[in-house]
Length: 465
Ligand code: NAD
Ligand code: UDX
Image (spheres, helix red, strand yellow):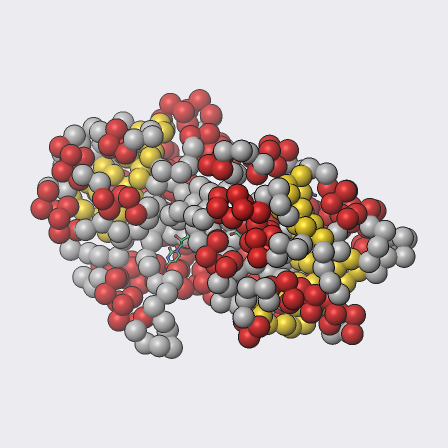
């Protein structure tokens, strides 16, 4: 089957970059990314490439090359569905906030709406690709909705989870460790799988394209995220023990990471993992395990999240106790708000929880982040509903200059590992702070010796005295 026309429903952090790369690598395929969010589509179509809704290094160049040639962003969902041979579903699958499974299960209402819309519009056979992260066995639910279409259309459902990480999305898409495609084991299913393999084969070596049954593919995505998050929680658990014993977490991470069975990646202790995926996907995994009565499995994975919550809490607790047990009326400068460097995404960022804790202690916070805008920061706090919007605005300011953000501060908290923080004129910052001048490095990126020689009292996650 030769695919000429692709539609992707959902122009978010995954749909946008993924389709941009497919369009760049397959100029013979028309790729249309659709979304119901008009502002988002307008931003994808912005003439000024610095206004794209997703910031990812290298993405602007790819969009510039393909947009208007074979890459299109549109709000005309029905039209794009109708024209496409292959439809990617890349809509959000957040944690449910109501009803059964509230706070744990994945909310599949957006997925179901897509399936119903496809069923209504489709007049010819189509391949449907699950790009969103979904609970294992979702493909059967999608299939049963699609099969009600009445238009005598045949659908094949594939699972093709996305493993890109934000901040490195373009590099991850261009050189994926593997591409995973799950499909039905029937001859028609195999044809659909091969149609998608052929698309990726334009730039991914064949041996890195893995094909499996649908359920293995769906479950592999949840498993990968659970394992990655578990590594962060494991190193963070050890960081607390390091602080008590005089061991240094970076030295421990290096020592264990050189064991080829463990490997060096994903062993950086931090103030806690964030991002839209880890917490949501583990909660979903825990919910699925519980729904099969596998309580020991559920408890095991839930601990990864509990450890992460503990890490954020103890970071803010340490700031309060170090600042003589009160931060009321004290200025604390936040360097970073994004959940990791090189992204403007703040979903589940540790900074949000740490700020909320400190604001509850009546601290006055000034935030500087190179890519996150003030509206986003206030929206993140507003979402928690801990205090009024007016109070959040009174206690927390946003600055677009790091030196100004740190001026007169009692303490600086590093919440994101942006590279530029390492290059600041720390003498200049020190001179304009309250004394003693504290730094709480939640990312372990600054140089302890040089900061202490300037006069800072420096605290790093995972090192004691
Ligand atoms: P996102 O919220 O950035 O984007 C989803 C988009 O889908 C939104 O713009 C929304 O308006 C749109 N949408 C929702 N319902 C729609 C409908 N019925 N019709 C048209 N558009 C609709 O989400 P995201 O970060 O791109 O994540 C998408 C999926 O990919 C999720 O399942 C997520 O778990 C998974 N995923 C995310 C990442 C990541 O790094 N963000 C990585 C791998 C997988
Ligand atoms: C993650 C997965 O890595 C990716 O494969 C999946 O597709 C989506 O979820 P993402 O959330 O974008 O990607 O970023 P990731 O690099 O995994 O970082 C997640 C969080 O863990 C960040 O807050 C990061 O700062 C933190 N982290 C990561 C650490 O604290 N220490 C580490 O060693 C690695």
